[in-house]
Image 1 (tube, one colour):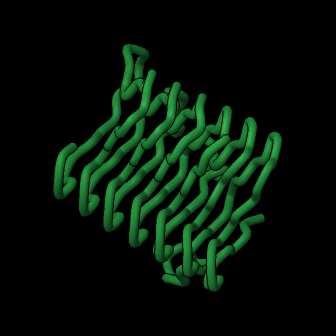
Image 2 (image 1 turned 45 degrees about the horizontal axis):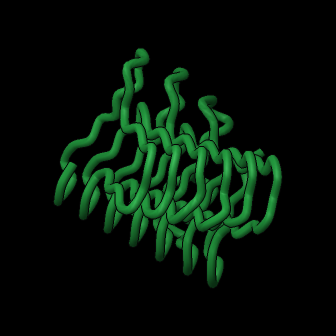
Length: 178
């Protein structure tokens, strides 16, 4: 069953200190029809202090639709380890699509069928990596964001794309750099 997590004064979801958390099949910032705008007043999903969390997945049922939120679509704060973000539609948020600000061992997208995220039409950067390490960004479509498609700052051991089949990202139409 789909949860509608929308129209909240602050963030849509903000779990803290979790192990093995799974967030799948939700409409965050939209109504039950998946298109009517019902923004949350903050970030769609804020995740901090979490280990082995999964946001979305490659199946249609696992995909989250995260759009129209007043800040980021997804924000990963410090002390996250082993987070997987895949198969989501993240668009039209008023800040970044995915903002990773700390943490390690994070996979955004993947090479399995439908594991890539669609990150588009956000009013800042599509995917922003700050102060993080061991991040893999693959098989995502990052387009038409109002700033940079994929931006990396003060981070180490980052892989964007790769040599595996389907590892490449499609990054185009962003208002600043790819």
